[in-house]
Length: 607
Image 1 (cartoon, rainbow, N blue to C red):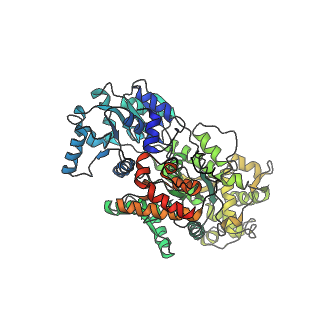
Image 2: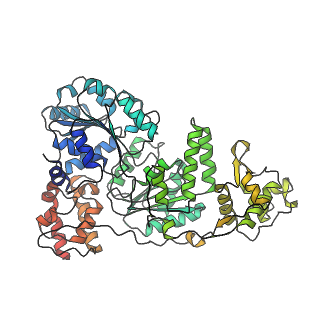
Image 3: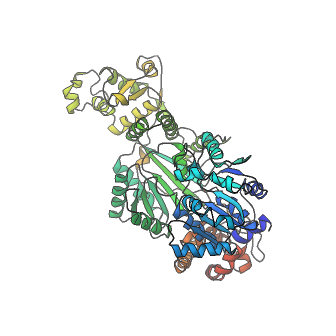
């Protein structure tokens, strides 16, 4: 079957995203491939289309049971025969699935690496296998951030099936990891496909120096401005996830925590509630999100700064996977930098992790378009600003901050570079703390010199000084602040410097800014006038309610019925016949016949 016919019939799209067609034709010609594509970039289509177009069965190796379940449900909802073999099945279920595979009734078999090795000797040898697809392939590499011992044995695929093409897929792999994946899997003349990392539907915003109470105030108002929208709040520690979720519940927000310290039952329950829109907010460590393919996550907040741009990018990528607009917020503070630096110093790869953390800091401190920084990190250049980040929307203002920097540096130097950040502020503010009194810092000339500046503002200025390289923190000396040679140039008047004006209004109640307008594909639908591009919000809500009803009837998460982007298209184009309904991007033949009449009935009431 022609790959465009497969795409239209089963998935409801008329064209492929960049790179997808080339990847599909490459593996269908019998060649190996390594596919690097960001979260939400459309990796699964790259092996699902060949699976449907080629005779036989495609084997998909995945390390995540919940992701397998998600993908199998999604495929079945599109009328595609798919099954999963993993430790979540009992022996009876496994036996029935094996029989279906042997009789040729399954097109895609998802399987865990452990189960794959166990089935190698019998089941796999009796199947006509058209393709092996290895998802989350970075797990195979000792350089990947999710090293999995079971994955290291997957090189046996090449030994046992020398003529079957292998496709390795991942969202995060630098050059050394990509090389290691190819070596470990013994891929033959594998072509590397690296897709664009640009996700223009994601807005990018950074909030600097917020205290816990200010974060809570912002988050509450942010969520209240987005009723019925699902989101994830990522935190550094398990304790923070629990406290934040409890605080949100006390304020009427339906929130739960998720971390590795919870029981498997608790984690699975939280994940299922979130997938089914019964739970809208999850406060989680990085363990959450990899195992679900939920397309209608509309926002992601980082309560703390992540340890690297790779982690940050993967986590924000869990928002807006359907291509509809989504918001991302990053909070960070001096305390985050101190804590993450300590983690990096204690890790087994100190130099690498320190460098990754510095690049993350540079992103957070940037005064240029944030999307350009992200793309540049992944070796992709953009010639223009994105217009959808906080820097593009509100470029930072600067002022001559030499005087303030000299005040702080003088306080540090007069203590022989032997104090922490907190003590620097106490001296500048003229605060008689126990440390100040014990070491007689109240007798210094700089004591109280900056009393007219708030503590929060001094925190911000010192953070800027750290980022500009005027000071550094000696972590091996109890986090003492040291003046750098560059800082000495400012202290002794050899150099002037600019500081960013602190935007105090940013910590007030956040207003919901208009998101980028969702681009509804232009379609020619007989009997319908050209779309005005104006969505009916009441119709969208009615369609969302119907989607929830359909999902509950079938035991599917709502986004598996239709994603948010399809609902936005329906509420904008307003098709009133089955044929018109089937021309909406994202609605395949199976879903058109299954759901069309019910959704059309709702639309007709509004037309």
